Image (cartoon, rainbow, N blue to C red):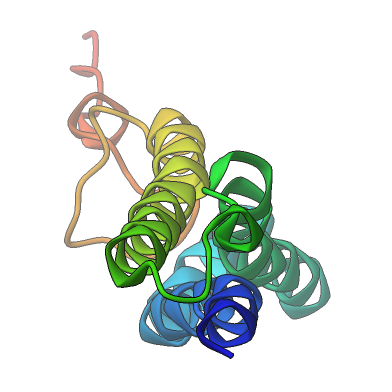
Length: 136
């Protein structure tokens, strides 16, 4: 019975971890993507892609690299706890990978010299706001 619970946990534990992270980041990610994509429809699409990546990343990594609790005997509590620990570790690492990939990709799209006080994709840069001196 313990093995069945451990197997169920291996399938059910990673998804809430990714979902919690996706819910936490959804509003700020959408605002950022609206700014970067230019339209609400494009931002909605990319927001959903990000959310799916954050939910499926932990599950994929956990199922691919987690310990198999079916290899434990029913009386081996240490083995089952180890399998659950491995599931939690791979789930958290699986959440970090897509999060880092998304953050890296978005950070590359932000102009380094953009004025943070000006909203909009094409924020005025200090060089762009300076007017050339009038020649007389």
